[in-house]
Amino acid sequence: MKILESAPYRYDKGIKILTLGNITKAYDRLTQQVKKGDNILDVGCGTGMLTLHALIKGANVTGIDINTEMLEIARIRIENSDFKENVNLLEMGVAELDNFDENEFDVIMSGLCFSELSNDELNYTLKFSKKILKQNSLLIIADEVKSNLFVFRFLNFLIRIPLVIVTYILTQTTTKAVKGLEEKVTRAGFKIESIRKNKMRNFIELVARNIKEN
Ligand SMILES: C[S@@+](CC[C@H](N)C(=O)[O-])C[C@H]1O[C@@H](n2cnc3c(N)ncnc32)[C@H](O)[C@@H]1O
View 1 (tube, rainbow, N blue to C red):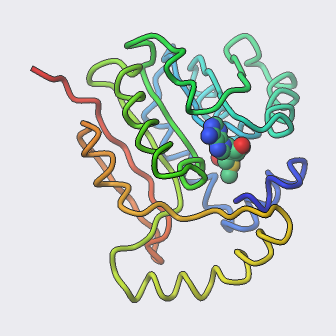
View 2 (tube, rainbow, N blue to C red):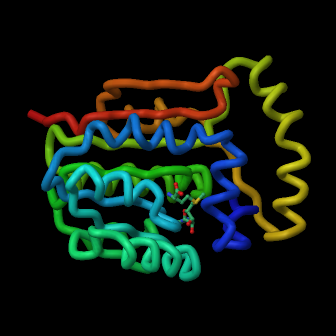
C-alpha cells in the first residue's frame, strides 16, 4: 500500500476505496479479541486506523512506525479523540522491537505492515513478538498474502500489474503480498487459532496464540 503512503493525508480515504471498505470490517472483526485494559503493540500503525479500533475497545496502545508523516496523522487523529491518554506513538522500526520488555504486551497486532517488510524483517518481527508478548496471548495480523493456488496467484498478478507500476513510479518501492505467512507464524512458535481469507485469497485475517513452552 506504499502508493497511498506517498500522500499520507489521503491514506485513510484511499485505503477504504481500494479495499471497498473491507479493511474497516476486518479491523472490527479482529479487535473483537481485544479486552478493556489490554496493553497492545500496533506494529506499523501508520495513520492509526487499527490503533483507534483497539482504543475504542478500552485498550492501551503503543503504536510504532517508521514514517513520520503517517505518524503525524495518527497523532492528530488521536488528539481529537477521547483516547489520547491511552496511546503512545513512537517513531521506530521493527528492527528496534528488542527495546521492549519481555512479556510486555497482552496483544500484538499489525495491519498491512508485514507486506512491507523484507523476509528477514518479518521473521525478526515474529521472533521478537514472541518474546515481548505474554505467554498465551494473541498475535493478530491483517495483510495481503500470496495464495498457494496458482490460479489465484495468476489472477492477483493480473489485477496488481497497474497498481505495482503506479506504486513504483510514485515511490520507487513496491509492496509485496506475504508468502507463506501461516507457516512463518507457526515456525516462530505461535499456534494459529483462526484464519479468514477473502474470495480472491489475497487478504488474510490471522489470529495466533503465543503458546506456553514447557
Ligand atoms: C499500509 S500502511 C498500514 C498502516 C496501518 N496499520 C493501517 O492499517 O492503516 C503500512 C505501515 O507500515 C509501516 N512500516 C513499513 N515498514 C516498517 C518497519 N520496518 N517498521 C515499522 N513500520 C513499518 C509504514 O511506514 C506504514 O505506515
